[in-house]
Amino acid sequence: MLAIEGLNQYYGGSHILRDLSFEVPSGKVTTLLGRNGVGKTTLLKTLMGLIPAATGVVSFERKDITHAKPYLRARAGIGYVPQGREIFPRLTVEENLLMGARKVPARIFEMLPVLKSMLGRRGGDLSGGQQQQLAIGRALAMRPRLLILDEPTEGIQPSIIKDIERVIRALAASDEMSSLLVEQYYDFAQSLADQYLVMERGEIIARGAGADMERDGVRKLLAV
Ligand SMILES: Nc1ncnc2c1ncn2[C@@H]1O[C@H](COP(=O)(O)OP(=O)(O)OP(=O)(O)O)[C@@H](O)[C@H]1O
Ligand SMILES: [Mg+2]
Image (tube, rainbow, N blue to C red; front, side):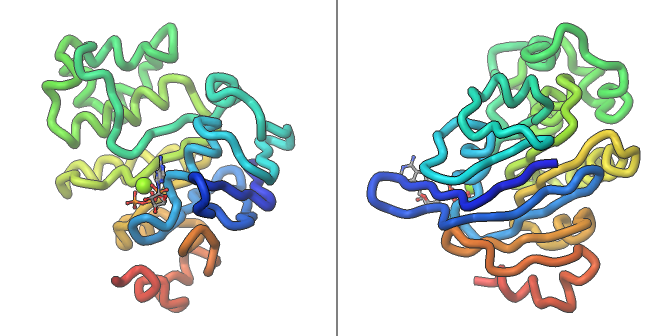
C-alpha cells in the first residue's frame, strides 16, 4: 500500500534518515518502534510531504507521491495524527472534525463517543486524552485508507489508551484501513502489530511479524 525506497533526509548537515526502505501492507497494522530522537517523526513528516525527501521514492497504492503536496496525500487517502496532537485549541470539537471533511461520518462518533458529547467544546478545553481522540477523529473524518499515527499514547491515561487501541484494531479488522503506528510504548505496539519495524539512528535495524516481537527481543532493543 505504502512503499518507501532508499529514503534519505537531512537537517542541515546531520543525516537523519539513512537509506530507509520498507513497505506498509494493506489491511494490516505496521508498528515502527524506536527510542527518542532516532528520526521517527522526521520519517512521518517526510511521508506526509511536510518536509521534502532529499533522495528516495515514496509511493502510495503504486503511485509515486514523493513530491506531492501534503493536502494531495491527504486527499489520496493518507490520514495523519501528528505527535503532540496539534488540534486547533480555539476551535470547537466539531470545527476541528470538519477541518478536512464536509460531514463527519457517524461511524466516528460510534468509535469515539466522547467526541459526540463534546461537539461544542473548544478543543483546548479537552483533556490530553480527549484531544488525542479528537486528533484521531479528525484524521478519520477524511476516510483514509492508511492512517499514520505518531506516538498516540504519549502522555495519555491507560483507559483512553485502551479506547484508542480498540479503534485501531476495529478499523484494521474491518479491512477498511491500514495503519502505520509509531510508538515507544512496547505493550501497546505489540498488541496491535501485524508487522513491526525497529528504527535506530535513521535506519531500520530489525523487522518481522508482530507475533514474533517477544521472541525477536524487540523489547530489549528499546530499553535505554
Ligand atoms: N527541525 C529540526 N531541525 C534540526 N534538527 C531536528 C529538527 N527536528 C528534529 N531534529 C533532530 O533530528 C533527530 C530526529 O528527530 P525526530 O523528531 O525525528 O525523532 P523521534 O524519533 O521522533 O523522537 P521522539 O521519540 O522524541 O519523538 C533528533 O536528533 C532531533 O534532535
Ligand atoms: Mg517523534
